Image (cartoon, rainbow, N blue to C red; front, top):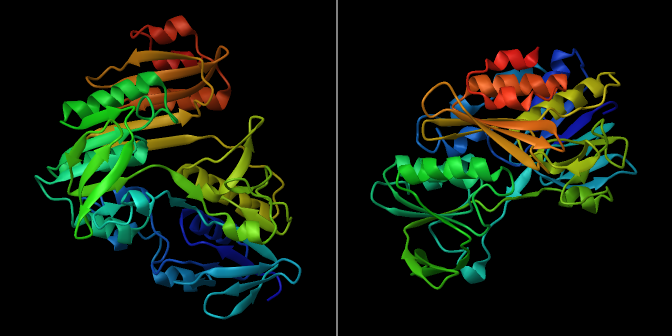
Amino acid sequence: MSGRLVVVGGGQAAFALVAKLRALKDERPVTIVASEESLPYQRPPLSKKYLLREMTLDRLLYRPEAWYSEHDIDIRLSTTVTRIDRGSKHVALSDGSVLGYETLAFATGATPRRLPAPIGGDLAGVYVVRDFKDADLLAEEMQPGRRALVIGGGYIGLEAAAVARTCGMDVTVIEMADRILQRVASAATSAIVRGIHRSRGVDIREGMGLHRLIGDNGRVTAAELADGSTIAVDVVIVGIGIIANDALAHEAGLETANGIIVDSHGRTSDPAIFAMGDCAVLPWQGMRIRLESVQNAVDQAEAIAAILAGSSEPYDPKPWFWSDQYDVKLQIAGFGLGHDETLVRPGQREGSVSVWYFRQGKFIAVDAINDAKAYVTGKKLLEAGITPDRAKLADPDTDLKSLLA
């Protein structure tokens, strides 16, 4: 159909794109092609409240089924795009049908890295968490007294470790790098988060790799670590990063590099095709990066919706992130990539602290641990382009609001 937008993927970015388009009164025909059997839903709670059975799937849905028909959005569940013909502007679907498009949007997200089968990755009891079915299976395993091994000390792994410990499991985390969160946070933040987990009984082993998993009758029973030691395990949770789902775009001849390369307007190397969210590689401060966050998926998708509706404004990322572990909320504003200095500031409440990042003297990010005031102030400073006075920032008696003056 002339004017049709086809959205490949049915997650956060896909929903944000079509919802914003309709909010902007754009009435073009829209089809979402979603591989999952569920309507679009929130993913962050999967590794937290949903895994703890504090939320049900229906509460995770962005909108009920009726919303899509009311807004003239054709959503095709349990369906994938198998091929893109850019010349004729058609996509072939897994159900055998063909769709014409005027505009195509990739919101295909990313896939968790899995352990290779030769080292035990195919054993029962080994999990990743990317969709609700993964979480459903893992939730059945989370029983008091059982032994969980978490492979990977990034945010996903640590959140899973917190849930497992909350369920009364014995938890060991192994991280091959020198410290947990090494790729995404400063040494100061790593130390704070390490202390939080160890105070709750989690065994964190840094600089430690996995040699292999050991199974009995196809079920994991133990793990042999890189130092030659062996630990008994009942459940293994793998959190070793994600891979952008860019294969379909690559096959269609679009420019890719562990993600679909886009410009500041979200356009790929084909001006009729856009990409957003975890699958997109976007320009930011002279670099090309992938921002793996819900915030970026929403903001970039909404910016692209505005562009489709007639705006010429480029997408200027304002990164922020969060992570919930136990009763601790870590809020991050900015992007600490390439920092060369940090400043640790105690908060006003017990257990609150913030880590402020600088690069060549310029303030670039803040990690706030149970410190909402530091997070809000840091975010406002970044948006205003202000680098706070270092001496005032270091003084715990300084009112953070005064730094905005």
